[in-house]
Length: 340
Image (cartoon, rainbow, N blue to C red; front, side):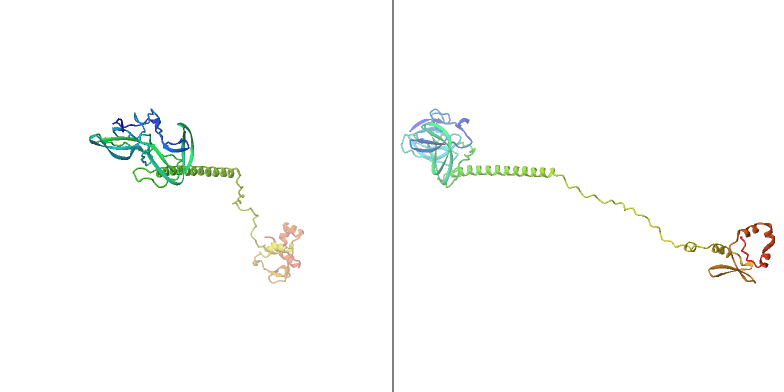
């Protein structure tokens, strides 16, 4: 067992060694391969504490786990007359257990986790003969993932090693099908971590699909409205005028007078005037045969006739006035009624 040195300050790897998702590598050795969570160890790498060596016999004392690591397992070890507590620190992205090296003194990752599933799809970077290649997708039904652990020791009286754990910032979205955890130790199990990554990816795809469908339906609706607006609206029927239709006013019926109903004869026009004479003159009007007659009181009725032009001249002359009514009556001639 070799003491590398103390690790009394919290080690934090530089930003170039930290990623938002776990770095998975498929490391090939001859015909076999294993999956390793990065960062990968290389001599002089600043992603590990100073003097770090993955040989299981090397440790830091006194010391405690670096930032981004947590305790995977612990044991008691004797150092002379004192007893020390040994701790293996593993990355916090998965639930790791301590890996016992099959060959003492040989380099060993120190941390391991396993899963068993119907199918798991991993996005990995292929490493062949120590050379980092391209990233690819592999599918596995069951396998293990290892990581480089850092061993620290402390004894009574040393500062209590308090692991400083950074919250995981995410998991690879290409990891699928998590199942049973391989260990009951604390932390997030490997299948659970894979499940979280898969769930995040599926949720992101569903959200993107929903947004795309929303904008597509909105675009199609606008297109339909645009087509409808290009068609001119139908012309409404012409409204009927509110003013009444003019019509010819029919005069009210009226009754014809007696004179207008039957044409009068010349004799009838004068008879009406003769009828207006006073009875004091000794004349009595009579009607008969459709003609008007005037009868002198105490004498025979004389038929009225229309005055002639000669009688009118006589009536206008002084002689006619002096002759009087008696002369004409004595002669037995018919005398028309004088005009009043």
